[in-house]
Image 1 (spheres, rainbow, N blue to C red):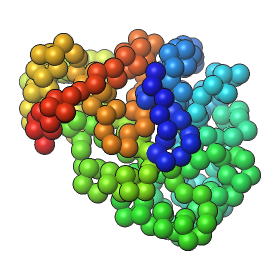
Image 2: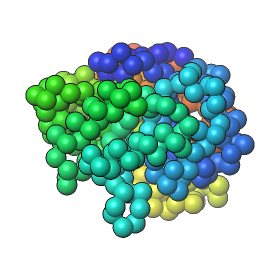
Image 3: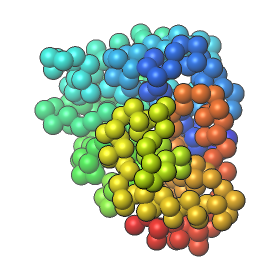
Image 4: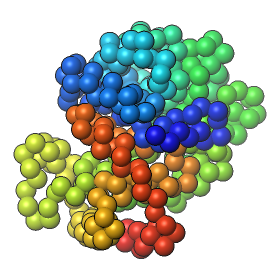
Length: 312
C-alpha cells in the first residue's frame, strides 16, 4: 500500500482509505469487525467516519468497539457540523458546539484523540474566526491532531486559509469532496484552491454509488441487492444519459488494456493532483481487497488524455 502525505502536512495516509458510513447501518457488528481488521491487515491506515453516520453516532460507536489496541495503527478521521438533533441545537461550527461534539465523538470512539477532525459543511451562521480558534484550542489540548474541511466552496477555503494566517492558528490540511470520473465539478475552482493552499484532497463517492463498477446495464433494471434498486434517487442522480455514455466509453477503454472499471476509477483518482487517499466504503471483506488492488494501474500521459476526452 502506497503511503502519502496529506497535503502539505506531515500526516501520512494510505492511498486507499476506508469510508466507515456503512458500519452500524448496512453492516452488523461482526461483519464490520471483519472489514475493519481486513483493511488494517491490507495496509489501509485512513479510516474516515462522521458523527452523523449510522443513526447519529452509530459508526463511531462500532469503531470504538472494534478497534481496541489497533487504534494506534490507523489515522482516525471523523467529522462534525451536520445536524445531530432535529431541533437545530446540535449542529454547526460554533465554539460551544465544537467543544461538545468533540467530546461526544471521543467517547464513542473510545480514544483520547482524533487524528483528523473535519468540518462536514460550512456554517454560515458562525464566524470562521470563531471556528478556527476553537479548533486550534483542541489541537493545543491534544484532543485533535489535524483539521480539515468537507463540502466547502473554494472561496470559503481561501477565506479560512487567509484567516488562519492572520490569526496564527492551525490551518486546514485537507478537503473532502465528491470527485469521480463522472463528477468532476471541483476541477474548476476547488481543486486549484486545494493546490494553491496545499490541502490534501480526499475524494468520496469514487464509484458514483456503483455506476463506475460497470455492474449496471443500460436499459435494464438495477439488480435487487444494489444501491440503485434500494435508493432510486441515486439511480436518477447518477444513471443519466451523459454518464451512461461515459461509462460505455470507459468500459471499452479499460477492457482493451486488461483492466476493470474499478481499477480505472480508483487509479485515475489516485493520479489526480492533490489526491492523498481515495475514500471507499465496503460492506464485505472482498470489497476491501478489491479496493486495495484497484490503485495499482499507473496510467500513461496518453491514457490520461484519452480518459479526459471521454469524460468531459
